[in-house]
Figure 1 (cartoon, rainbow, N blue to C red):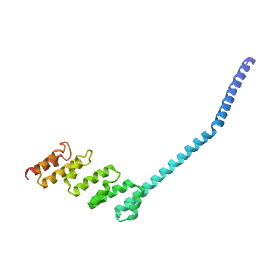
Figure 2 (figure 1 turned 45 degrees about the vertical axis):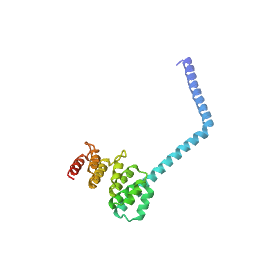
Figure 3 (figure 1 turned 120 degrees about the vertical axis):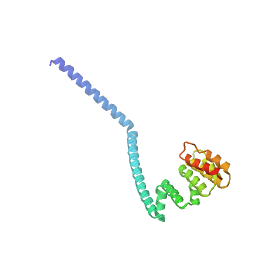
Figure 4 (figure 1 turned 30 degrees about the horizontal axis):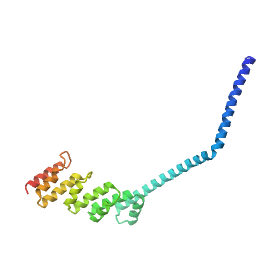
Amino acid sequence: MSAKENLEYIKKELSSEEQFLESLIKAEKFYKRYRKPLLGGLLLLLFLGVGYWGYQLKREHDLKVSNEAYARLLQNPQDAQALQILQEKNPRLYQLYRYQEALKRKDPKLFKELVQVDEPILQDLARYHLAVLKKDQKGLSRYAKGGEALLQEMALLGSGWLLYERGAISQGHQEIELVPTNSPAAPFAALLRHYGVGR
């Protein structure tokens, strides 16, 4: 290499080192200026990570404890401690257990309580079962015509049947005719229509 090339090489090296030092100085100024917000953001991220991890651990623990309590209740429905644990740790599973018990015992009082819970599906099912237990034809009809009822066709069949039992055959037919022909309940509706003809 000639002296001129060596000189150019040294200039380039000095220039790149100068640029490197310049960027280090800028980074240091940036760090000094924003040190507190940067450290605060880092600590916040760390705190959020630890909080999320702790929350997940608590959820897993509560789920495990509530499942154990539910299993104990299935073995012994009189276990008040398990019922309390289930109510505290998993309110949705607790309401589902209460619904299961109301079905077993055919308990209208418990169904009335379930109509008030903050679980739309359980409310819907409890309204249906309450009307069936009370043999409330108007309640079944209201339930079936009230929009998005889960057991709409069954309620129409029940309402029609109760009208047949009271001798209101034409009204019973009107209720049963509301069961869609593509419904799984359509064969039962056809049977009930024939039943009503002979009465």
